[in-house]
Image 1 (cartoon, rainbow, N blue to C red):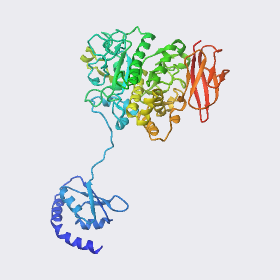
Image 2 (spheres, one colour):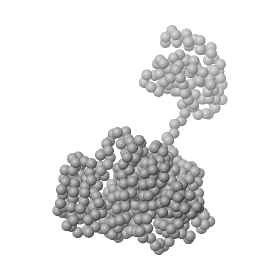
Image 3 (cartoon, rainbow, N blue to C red):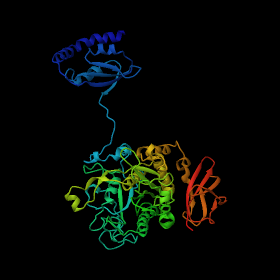
Length: 557
């Protein structure tokens, strides 16, 4: 021991006598308490036995925390050595720099205080709970309020778990009987009901949104409000577009679908054109419905809408058929088969991550999400209120898997970095395609989903956010992120005279029919012609310098 330390030890012995006596008395009383700790840093190194002697053996244990032996944790029992005395002992040591309390560390898990959250088994599986650690906002870094359009059978505005999360069209004053924003709908303050052709978004007088309410709840029931359940997005604005009711035989037509989508489209176009002064920043639409047995050639206007919506920055998500074992490519399913890169199609999984009661396709269904006995918000009807059923389990099917993917689009928009936001601002279509890419690349591969969807995977929101981070940090470039989606066929659907739109050099183009048989097609530069072929679905394999891409095309006549 150095001379300096020896003198210091001698001087300290008298000063520590009272502390030692106090400690011995406390030990003899056999007080059982937890150890506390103080972490201290020094400018010179020590050995543990030197610190033991310098502090009069007052600490239960002293442990070095680094190889240099300049940082130590001093453990003690407060009943034997009060905290202030322990700190004073440490502060008087030679070469003392600073100290802090050694407190317990807990893994950060941002869980809401919603009373029924523990019933929502799907949220941990898709890593929504981990995504909340990164972001829970409903506004992106550019100040845009995230809006998701729920095209369904409505939502009652008085439901307690949606307060503050329902989109309001402030541009159209309610009750004045005037179409203030000139969009063709009078007083559409809370959205529009295309069934009743009015502004009552809560469905018909009888059924009251029995389907749209749980769908909306999965996306955006208010989170952390000590009420009911939590949506994947705690804070979001839900644009309620009612195009059907929950009756047994609702009179719903494709024309209703087209009107509903165009209502949403108008609001986003207006937002883009006015730099956010009017309209709504709609980032996604949710379609938890469809038509079994139908093909895109029977709905070309409907199918073409998805590219139009995507052009203005809207990503669209739709539910595949619930017909288990149905290969949608041959059996038909709308809008699943619509050939748009701005459409994400979803089938469902069980709580054990198995493919669950839904159609499949390794070509036309993109990914899966949980869709078995989901716990969500129930319709806010008098009967449900009386029976305490405004929250319940048992919602099964692709209808309830789809809104999880839709919500993921909203989460990514609210989390987006400046690089992504710049793309969304300058090229909304590119922004939509990037969101699709982040989601599809972020799935968890599941063995039981091989051949059931394009990705062979189930939604993982946290992983999609991490893939976005890779792009934000510059680890991957735009072309890598967009992959095949920086190529498109125009117009699609069309009459067989096709223009290939690409920002990369094309090496070769091959054409195939729906069965995968190679067919002859006329290719001149970026122009493709299959006008001589019959109507139906075709595939084009596009070879670029670094990769190969497959695109679907629908020929009408």
